[in-house]
Image 1 (cartoon, rainbow, N blue to C red):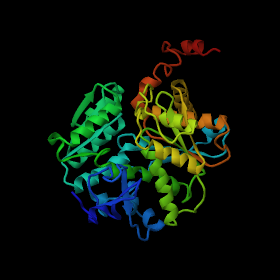
Image 2 (cartoon, rainbow, N blue to C red):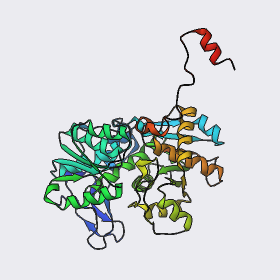
Image 3 (cartoon, rainbow, N blue to C red):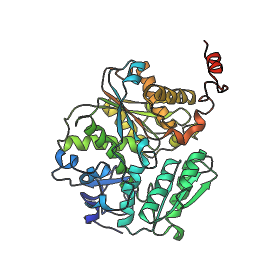
Length: 416
């Protein structure tokens, strides 16, 4: 089902193997037939100017000239995610002994996570290829984003999740009216099942956003890089800390930065990328610390379930980027995750889900260990809303006091 040079893909010219460079027509394929390497979108951007971007809508479609989407994408029924806040985190910076810190808070997206970005790109590919059902394997946030995007676009949806997800994420995925299938297994087992379903007649005309549409889907994470650079006044941060689940987000932020440099939209200057994992699912961090190029799969055991991918597809590329840019990959345990969630909330009024607790926790650890420069301009990502992972902090986030409705009771309770 090739659509080479089709206008519905804008500047995209084809798919390219990240390992051997073999080129393919645009289509719902994700692996190279020559070497089985992953495919990604290749482009011919032409002339892209800052003023054209700045005159666009206040969502990811301001960057349509850099994405595999049609020129009229902003007029189509979609969730229109993006242009989320870049919070100048002076209070958190002071707490950590840093000079300049920003939090890119993606909890402001329509379904309250960054997944709305990637799903919106995949949705356009699904439309172009004539798919009638949008599907995915998910650790929670993606399931909700797919359900919402399909509902908005008038498509069917069927999403697959591990049965032990947080209740809030299960509810959010189910409320949009599509089919939600819980599987008794890990995310990696759910993902393998979806790969089998693609080859079966049951999955015919289905667009699996993170499988057969993955090359298009992954491009949505580049918009984080574009927004950060534009919100900083068209410059790249010195350092950025990014959560690592499959690793795709980190690799595409790097790709976005490199595209901006190549197009002359930002100054060509060094930047460092740091990956953040939860200790209970940290195969990339373990490989980085051991000096390995191969990521050994693990069985996840962490409260940060949105990052609980034990066999991350882009793990080796995360290692390459961390080493190339002079960054690192680090991990924190569940206790540190909870502490970091509360620290970010207390200092900046941003309530992060557990993945955000991982990035802030790793940021704090990197500063303490002297790995991250506290004087350099730094951005840390919060990719989702804390209301989705209330269980992580519910035991500690309780009323300060329970009193009778009287001034005397209040004075007594807070006498000291």
